[in-house]
Every structure is written in C-alpha cells, then in structure tokens.
Image (cartoon, rainbow, N blue to C red; front, side, top):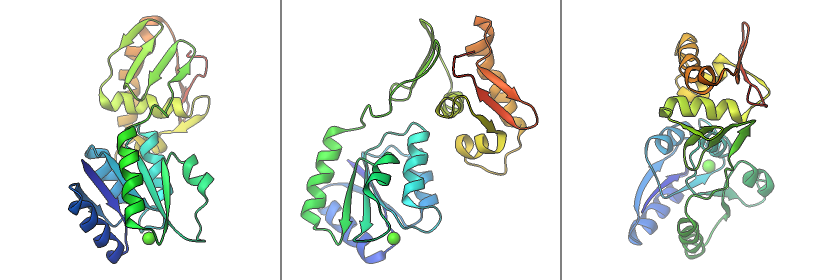
Length: 224
Ligand code: CA
C-alpha cells in the first residue's frame, strides 16, 4: 500500500512517515500543495493524507482538483483544532475523512486502514448530458448505447466540460485543469476539442461541445 503524505510541518511529516513505514506502508512525502497535485495525478496511491494549510495551493484545492480530474484516491484531511477548517467544506471538496491535530497516531492509523479498505468510492457519480454519459470511476464514455474510446487527455477534457455543463468554460481554464501546464498555447485546446467532436458529436450529427466565440467552449446540458 502506497500512501502520499502532504504536510509542510517537518515534525508531523516525519512522525507520520516513520509511523506508517513502521506499519508496512510505502510512503511518499510532499510539503507543497502544487507538488502533491502533480504526484497524486502521476502516481496511483492507495490513500492520501492531506493537510489543509499548505504552501502553493491549499489542501481544499488539491482535493477538489483531484476529484475534478477523476482521481478517486481516498483522502484523509488533517486540520488544526479550532482552525479554519470546516468539516462540511472539507467533505464537500471530496475528502473522505478528516482528523483534527493534534491527533492520536493509533486513531489515525485505524481510520486510514478503514479508508483503504473501502477503496476508491463510487462517490463520483456518472455525469449525464442527454444521451452522452461519462463514468469517472470506470473512465468510460457512452453516446446512447455506443461506448466511445477516448484517450486519457480527451477523457480529462470531456470530464471537465461535463462537470461544468451548461457553463461557458475558457480555454485558459481548460488548459490549467486538463493539462496543468499554464504556458501551453490555447490552440492545443482547439485541437483536442476537434478530436472529441469527431468521436462524440460528428458521427451522431450532434453538437454537444459548443464554441463560445473568443472565449472557449460550453457543453450542452442536453448532450447537443
Ligand atoms: Ca500546514
């Protein structure tokens, strides 16, 4: 079992690492939110222990972004007692559990085991726009009864558009959520939207992905 610890306080990070390694876990550590986002997207962890207050981006943002990318790794959030953390907000971003600092390591470990046992949940329901359906847990896409094969990038792009269906989404937003490389040129979005349209729209004579001129795209809530 491989666990990612995201914690900027060295003493807590070290205690967690030693405790988890002692219990037989493989452990990676990240002290920044943005690094954690990268690691958790590239590497498949069995669980993530995520502090809320982090340099880079906050634990909330890390959690929400991972869920938006369709990554369903169980997440346990760590928060300071009486701090800024609001449980409802934490769970709303897609966290599975939370533990308040200072915590008992035995309690944390028990809850971590329970989280890993449950595994990635089907929390993220299928997204439906008319007869266009995307299932983040299965990473599958359907138009009516047809299953459509998408590359990971095409899938990520469609997933993000479907999360925000009915809303105009800027090309910049798409680049930062789907590619996470802000310096990429807008034209890459256009190219990938073209690929997607050839798979989910053109063969069915539909227009699920609408162009919003000078801005970006909108996924029609009725599937086009
Ligand atoms: Ca912190």
